[in-house]
Length: 71
Image 1 (cartoon, helix red, strand yellow):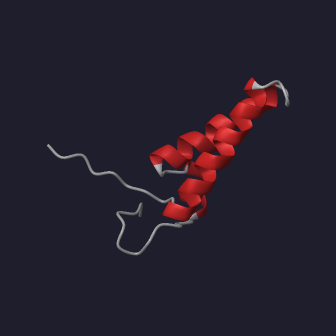
Image 2: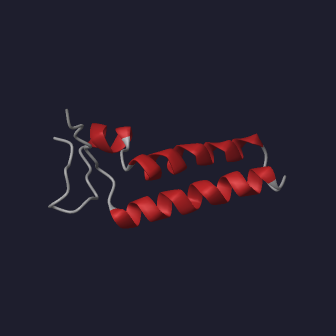
């Protein structure tokens, strides 16, 4: 059985999410910012999965028209 992967995060959005997530985690690891830097896990995860639950609630899709999008 083939799994269908639905996305609602576009490529540019994905790159920005991953970059911001990694930056926040790196700043936390270096001791520059406090534990709230772990919030970087959220954009990192949504960027890697190309799925954002908040986007789905708001009906936002930043992926292209030919991508498999969430309804």
